[in-house]
Amino acid sequence: MLQAIREKVTGWIAYGIIFLISIPFALWGINSYFGGGEAQPAATVNGQEITSEALDRAYANYRQRLSQLFGGAIPESFGSETMLREQVLGQLIEETALRQYIDDQRYRIGDAELSRIIRGMDVFQRDGRFDSDIYEAQLRSLGYSPLGFEQELRANGAMQQFQAGIQQTSFTPPYSQKRFTSLANQTRKLRTLRHSLDAADIEVDDNQIEEFYQAQADRYRTPEQVKIDYIEVSLEGIKQGIKVSRDDAYARYQDHLDNYTSPETRETSHILIKADSDEQSDQALARITGIRKRIVNGEDFAELARALSEDPGSASEGGNLGEIERGVMVPTFESELFALQEGQLSEPVKTAFGWHLIKLHSIKGGATRSFESLQAELENEIKTEKAEVQIYNLVENLANLAYEQPDSLLPAAEQLGLGLQTSDWFDRFSGDGIAAEQKIRQAAFSAEVLQQQLNSEAIELGSERVVFIRLNQRKPSQQQPLEQVREQVRSELIAKNLREQNLAAGNEALAGLQAGKSLDELAQEWSTGITDHGFITRQQSEIDAIIRSRAFNMPKPERGIVYDGLSLSNGDYVIVELSAVLSSDAEADQESLARLNEGIAGVEYQAAVKTITGRAEVVRTQLEEL
Image 1 (cartoon, helix red, strand yellow):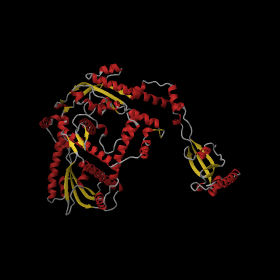
Image 2 (tube, one colour; image 1 turned 180 degrees about the horizontal axis):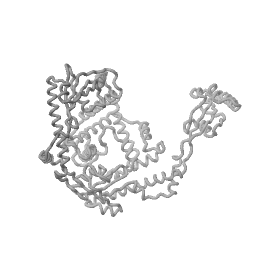
Image 3 (tube, helix red, strand yellow; image 1 turned 90 degrees about the vertical axis):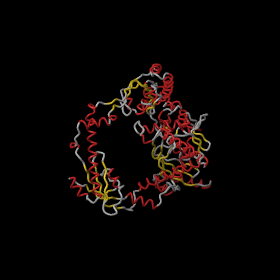
Image 4 (cartoon, helix red, strand yellow; image 1 turned 45 degrees about the vertical axis):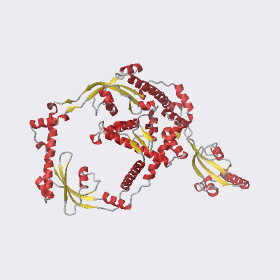
């Protein structure tokens, strides 16, 4: 959060804004990565530089996302650090080339559309309506000017226009839809036979346990553990120390009184006699005056409206205009309407359309919530605003002190009057208390904290908590004695032997089936029953997913029967018999076709991005030279 706070990004509102201006296809934003400098660029795209600092930030962001996705450890299958950095640089190059192309093709967001987007953002609204004061205040807190923010929205809107232009014009040819439908509706006739040994029948002796333990020694080590010292700063904690007087809360109530008043609506009916000239106006006035007398004398307003009103939109409804709030009708009509009492009939009212009679049926809203009902909410608002200012200053000072004295957090804690706390032991993958947070564990086992024993940078936990940590104690990984893990080793060895024996029996049986033996004969040999699944679908949930997947990957039985086999996660071995395949060209599920179209649209969009990048003049610097 330190970087965010230094950019004056505070509170959940800031995060809402940042989310709303992010482009949908990017793994990370690119605008903030471009800056000057004399260092050798990581790449240039049509003369525009991507700095090495930009690559470093994007790579760190990418690694963090991968680490979070896989619980703190990135699988080796993702490749080396060099490969990951090359992937990140390739993404930055694609984004740069695409933005240049969009600018050249003059994709644009107009003023009206831009206004609609901004006014529709919840973070700029109060009580469901756009509030210009909130808009300007939140932009200031983010370090944006209105012009800069709007330019960013225009750029991202143009990006979305390009993407939508490709994806929304993508289509799937009828032949492909038919082929997809046929495959999606396909059913397969299936029988299975399971070979399952009882773990109680598997015997292992002490020598086997010893050998297995020695061969797998690295698996029986305690994980490396650490304790950390930490300082936590939270918005809620700061708020608890802030006092707000009743006078301050009441002043805010008075300043924003309109926000606590619900809009007034009036259920209204009218009768209109049109008039397009002065002569017609006099005639219309005479007619509307006569109608009014008839209503005063007891005739029904709605019946007269149906018979006499010249407003085609409301006459058939007895003149009913529904509920009307201020700002909807023309001024003269609105002025008269909002001066009426419930049930009252107006005098004739002239507008550009002619002469009206207005009847007010009921009034809703318009009430102002009392200060007493809002006092707690107002006090909390003021506390939050003051706390956000304090947390910015506090974390900024704490970051500076932690950096200036990197070998201890105690001086920073004492100088700022904060408590220095110590965690329990935890490892890379689990912990209690503060260590239950993945970001804390990740930072605690980073090179800076674990090996260099420096204070960490600010660690943001949600939008309202910031933590600084340093290493307190380190407990290295240790080999667990055999006697301590003997039962675990025994169980794992039994499971291994069970799986191997089931697999051997299954492979032997599969060879016999492919040589001409029947599944029924094999069932007699194994003294177990066959499960006849009949015709199954791809989505038939009552069948194990791994068996269902294997069945739909087996070749069609052109003549006779096809067999295959597989091991299950519990060690059992299953023989799969496929005897028939039926396809249907009936109408496919529309949701499935929609997913197919979305997939094709995504491929076409990525192909367009690759084409644009391929046409760009790109110069890359070897990573080892950066």
